Length: 138
Ligand code: THU
Figure 1 (cartoon, rainbow, N blue to C red):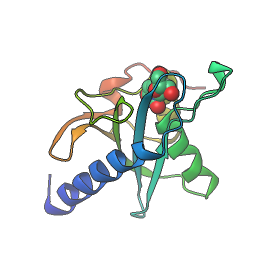
Figure 2 (figure 1 turned 135 degrees about the vertical axis):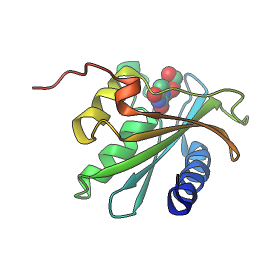
Figure 3 (figure 1 turned 45 degrees about the vertical axis):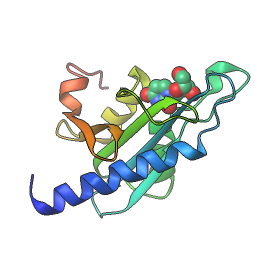
Figure 4 (figure 1 turned 45 degrees about the horizontal axis):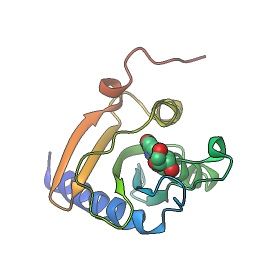
């Protein structure tokens, strides 16, 4: 990873952790934040937004993607994700759900990077191909 990529990674990690503060999670009390980097260098944040009709809940990752796509973005480089019990720092890594992986597949190539964030200094990195092999396409 070169200096620029390293800088982007830490920026995304901090933004994902901060985005957790906007989570609307009155049912699960599990707060997730995501920060999505576009090819043009912009960052879109997202949080989970729950609903009394549970199936209407939107995950943090999809919130970030839908914000970005609705602003005209189509090319993405990386996403950072941080999640854990509301009001606490994450004690563990939160991994994207299957629906969010499929949304990533819709807009991203196999080398799209996913940073799972535990805190400002600890993360794990995967590619989209690693976490969604043999993905569905039309
Ligand atoms: N959640 C996310 O925001 N992202 C994921 O990838 C997994 C789950 C949210 C949805 C719900 O608000 C809470 O975490 C518990 O499932």
